[in-house]
Amino acid sequence: MLLLNLLPWRERQRLARVRRFQQALVGSLCLALGLVLLIDQLARQRLHEQAVASQQRARAIAVLDSYLEPLAHLRTALEQTHGQSRALAALRAGQQRLPTLLGELERALPEGVELTALTLEGTQLQIAGLAVSAGSLVAFIQQLELASGLREPVLRHMQRQASGEHFRLTVHVSAAAS
Image 1 (cartoon, one colour):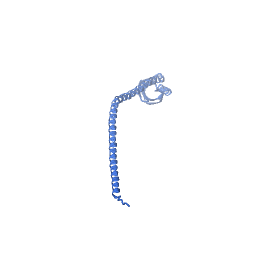
Image 2 (image 1 turned 90 degrees about the horizontal axis):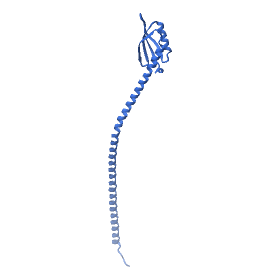
Image 3 (image 1 turned 135 degrees about the vertical axis):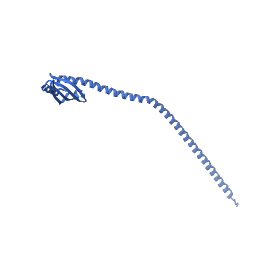
Image 4 (image 1 turned 90 degrees about the vertical axis):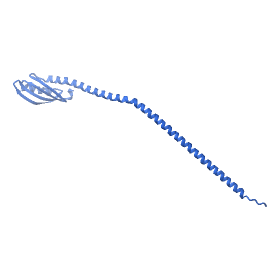
């Protein structure tokens, strides 16, 4: 029988397998390193693209802000105009109030009473005048109580003089007269 020594052949096969494994390991490591470098390069490129896009958006926003700046001035001018319009409307309402108030006073004024001063402050009307007698002054106050736009007449001062009764009274002007 023939005896064969297979030990060296097996040893060579084992070394060949180890070399193939090492080559596959080095190849896999090189491939993995190449793949990591490729992914890193793609991520850096994407980051650069995002930075460029962000800069472009910032420039576009700056341009739009420059367009909006005159509009802000227009808004403030518009608000000022609205304020002036409201002030003019309040003045017009005040203009309509005064003729109504004077009409009420004229209707309430009896014979023998003469008005010397009228002062309107808010809703309070101060009246100064001269009455021929105390009776004509009482009639005037009663007529003021009956007037639709005037309420709560209060005699503040009355003084007897040779020319007649000098008086001062206050009357509240109601919102209906406004």
